[in-house]
Length: 280
Image 1 (cartoon, rainbow, N blue to C red):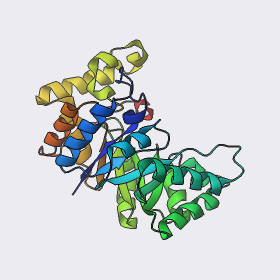
Image 2: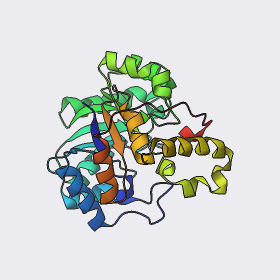
Image 3: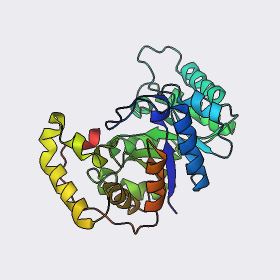
């Protein structure tokens, strides 16, 4: 059974292509979390890099929530990698006002494949052994790194993109391989930071090189007589081996629409040739 995870990037920072209003107010965040919790959502996806998001969540209170956070990219000139990871994690617990969290990911998967990979994973493994986290893993942009990561390290969780323009994780065979390895996969970027839901932003000059694919996508949505949100969400839900789907919202109405879309039948989208839109 797939779960919804509530993204929190815009709870503490100005995040998202379609976000023109900056980070959400404390009151709006509280309202979104209240509605999400009442609707049965229990997972929050967050990160140290999301501004003061952890402090906001700590103030609101996260009792009953499963928290997945991320360690920021490790600076190239860092001389104490274990100290860096430990310090960031301890600060996460302090700001969230909790004693442990469900999962801890590396925001930059390349850190695990660099010269300090063994030291970094040793630190993650120690936190897992101490039961300060239940699951450790990485956030990825492209599945090409997964062979090296899964052969070297016993990870529990991978987070990566799936959307109507980017199905590489499935096309590469890695959704099946991760499932066979007992590694969870959480899908993110399902709306491409809101771009797929905003025709007016798609029409901006910057996105002109992708105009044809947006026309095809919007015509497909229109013919379906459903909303872009419903079609995008339904597409990701069709990948049953994605155990969790991460959504970011700006309003209570948006999270309400996501919850309502869970009752729709999952349906795979046609193939849209997007070139490099998946990097957004």
